[in-house]
Amino acid sequence: MSEKKEKPHILLLGMPDAHSSFFEMNIAQIPQGPKLNFALHLPKPVRKKINGFFVNIFNPKKKAPYMGLRLIIQNLRDYVDFSLIEYPRNDDEAISFLMRNKNIEAIGISIGCENRVYQAKELSGKIRTARPEINIIFGNYGAVAGKKLNILNENDGYVLWDSEEEREEKRKQNRDFYTGEGVHDMRLWLKGRGIFAGDPDSPLISEAIPDPDILPTGTVARWFSEKMGFLNMPNDNNKMGISIGCTNNCSFCNTRFKFNRSKTFLFRKAEEIYHAMEKTLDKNLQRHDFPPEALFFLMDENFMKEEKVKSGEGKINFLEVAERLCELIEHSEKNIHWGTFSDVRSLLGYKNRHGNYLGLVRGGMQSIWVGLESKEDVFDKRGGATVEEVEEMIHEIQDLVITIIGAFILGLDIHAEGES
Ligand code: B12
Ligand code: SF4
Image (cartoon, rainbow, N blue to C red):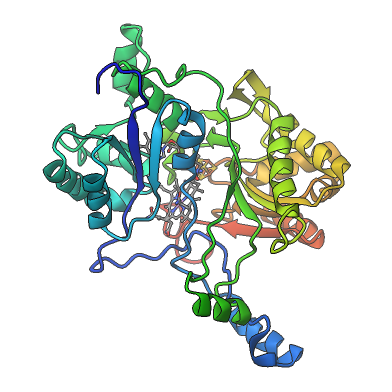
């Protein structure tokens, strides 16, 4: 790419569906159990009974928006013309798009997880054959793993992430380095090619992204699915990235490596998150096919953690942001609800400050996903709480009708036979 006035055209791509010889099931989500809403005019108790059997069923093909790619588009769209294919069915779909659109100069591939690194390498080979002149960029967790394991190299494309040694080297030369945060890194990469796409360090914006409509598109199939309630998902569900990275140190997790145990808040203050939510609610209220509310899943590893984190306006206290957001939602009396991730220490810390969790429910919290990991406080994210204290906390939160999802990773070194 050379210096030019018109916007460069870049294709952003999620990983194509896995090869059929490779079984993949996405379990990182809560069960969505299809529901028989109006099916066959069955009496309510019968429907309820049938729904009871379905309640723990997962939909392994459910697609979630690629928040990272969306964030790049939201922040860079004034400077770059983007095309987005989040879930290509196979490599050919991506290649034929590139062949049809010869003005595309670069392709950014998001490798969400390391289980897709070899597949990404193969795809890069096919792109090189079809369009040898195109720039290939890799980002996201899988790309970092691929670089660290030396599977992805410069022949395959640019991995926009610098190791600690590379960072040190660039620091010495007074050069900016790739942090793993895609908006910064794309700006930096483009700058290196003479294209201004905003200052790499400028504050980010983040908009809510509605979950995709998963009903079939054919009229009859769609009508049938709607009536049966199969694949039924709330229409007004949104994802919203509010921060990136995590300062905790769980041994099994790539987040601490990828972002060097640092966290960046994507906004300047709680008011900005609230306004983004309100905007989505206002849109929903205009739609007759939506309930008069807005639901969000807030992408943040440790909502309510008391710590100073980077933001668009220097360091902020993250707990204060969370508290302020709850206040704003409560006082608005608007139908705004949300779920997020956190840890036991942060939740207990909130209770210490407020005496209970009522402020969270009033502030719109509907669900919270917490890494429980073990009976021991193995990753220092429980603040020394005993198992009984954790249980008590869970019950207290459940009593407020908040769904609490307790997660753990199977087969860690700390797990032993029997209870651990
Ligand atoms: C939502 C989510 C999902 C969703 C949606 C995934 C999707 N389509 O994006 C679903 C439920 C589908 C999912 C599935 C899985 N997930 Co998941 N998921 C997440 C989660 C919680 C949030 C992702 C997110 O939206 N973050 C917010 C956005 C803004 O950040 P981001 O994605 O990191 O993007 C930024 C950068 O990475 C970068 N970037 C991203 N793409 C690109 C592309 C380019 C070109 C560039 C330059 C930069 C770039 O820029 C972005 C902005 O800064 C993360 C944890 C986390 N907090 O990130 C785990 C996480 C990514 N998932 C993980 C895992 C393990 C899985 C599963 C394997 C689980 C399973 N056993 O089934 C599957 C794998 C799916 C697959 N084949 O890739 C791990 C990956 C760990 C690793 N070592 O690679 C993570 C990190 C959780 C963890 N800490 O263990 N996941
Ligand atoms: S708290 Fe979550 S994101 Fe943070 S290091 Fe542990 S598992 Fe990773």
